[in-house]
Length: 120
Ligand code: HEC
Image 1 (tube, rainbow, N blue to C red):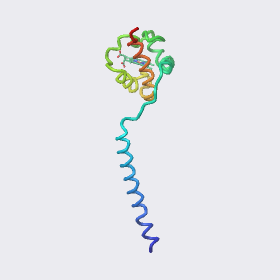
Image 2 (image 1 turned 30 degrees about the horizontal axis):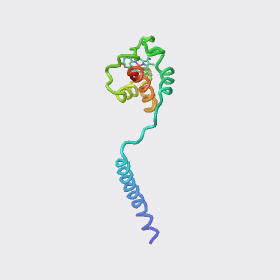
Image 3 (image 1 turned 90 degrees about the horizontal axis):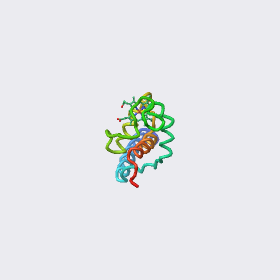
Image 4 (image 1 turned 180 degrees about the vertical axis):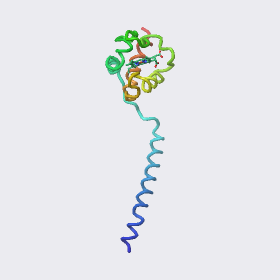
């Protein structure tokens, strides 16, 4: 008797607990704010650029491969984040969407720095 009750409500209890845990977890995550992003480095971006982008955009971003130059005048992107997002969705042109978000940010940081050298 007891065993059959447990067998019947067991899965229901299990489900309900799962849902409640999910809701609590999502709320906690929302309260914690945006997840911290791992830092990217110029070196990492530069290396990725050489591997994935240079054939079309030129080794120094000068457009030597026939694609638009990227070392200056990236005017259509108002923020580094917008640039990263474009790269993530559209580049490399032959394999869009293959960069991880982290890789896209690293390349964007590299290109952004080329376009916005810090004042000396
Ligand atoms: C197979 C050639 C090719 C490769 C590889 C490639 N691109 Fe491109 N890229 C293009 C072409 C062609 C355009 C122009 C058309 C367009 O915007 O889609 C472009 C446009 C862009 C633009 C927009 C330029 C502007 O002024 O609006 C950015 C930024 C860019 N590429 C970044 C990258 C990055 C970063 C990589 C490496 C991860 C990369 N591309 C790899 C061909 C390529």
